[in-house]
Length: 509
Image (tube, rainbow, N blue to C red; front, top):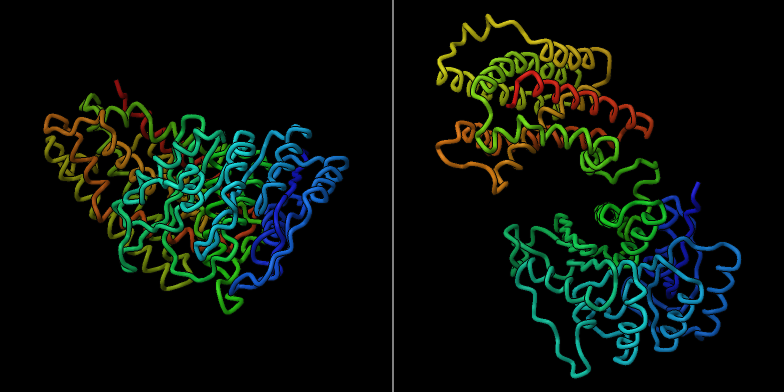
């Protein structure tokens, strides 16, 4: 197994919520091994910093050298560097030890807004360390400070999410391969504009840029005072995920979810800004609470099957209007027959539920299926196909195989197993419709026979059904063991392949 070793070069936090203490907790929670080189000692708590004792750069260098001589770190992560001397020393140490993966958290601006680094140190950090950085993780004030010149001019205020992206592009020009601009200081409304009141604070957006890719990672805004050490914790989580061989985008996304859950489940210690719950996932589930479906759809063994499902030629034919009409008619008839069994399976799920909340949620989904079947009948009538003709049609083998698999899972597996077997249909149609609805290549004119079908699955009632089903699974997934999660993944993959078989029975060209 590849050694998951990480060296953290940063300051110590006596209250344990940030700095080296938080770094080590995060790294341990990710199953990695942390080593440290201390740049400063602080006397602080959740209410503020009382004093700082700076470690001589020469001694910090001895710590770095000692680590490299014995347990070579796979990733180096930095935090508070504090002085010009420490920055110059670290820049040379990174070169001497040929460090390839540096996660640099530029701790330059305090929560109060005070600048923690003198201008000379900022300049040295910019010129000596950024060109050696793999991932840089500034918050908005730090990004602005990095972009300021000696005259003190600053980048413009943030008015829209697009401004974060513009800042990320400018910061990347300073040398790092990847830049994550953290948006926690500026909550946004859902439309991407800056929130101007507490009621408007809907989302936090982090922008990741690297290798020509720009990724927005959104999280719900949390009105919490328990945010001490979020920057340290996020950078360490990224470092740990890189040490675990995750690709940069997934390493950062998983780290954001980790911190999101850490804030959500914070213990509430201290009178000021309390620490995160760094061990919210010590049960070793491979996903943060509330992110089971995101984890599921981004797994390496799921992604290619899911991609094939939602990008099948049949689906693309719906978007551009080129799908043969006879194929669509055949699909409508078979899908109506499938929905009968789909409703039965959801009713079975309600029967297997152990709480009124889950039972009621299952009933909502069944009600939506009834509405969906009525829409199918409407489509069929528009093509001259009566309900009697549909019910007299023999099930295609693909339809029979799929429905019997789902019902068999319902009989032989637990409640969550059945929900996961049903998930590709419930989630997939919503994902397909959103994809086609937003694709500029989609024919949105009246000439596209299938445009109303697409609109049906982006409508509010279907979106609500997807949300209900998703919440059902999220509530229950966290109650299961890692081994059970692996079994559920296999069920999802097989059910998704059955969905693909459903497309295959209708020629797309």
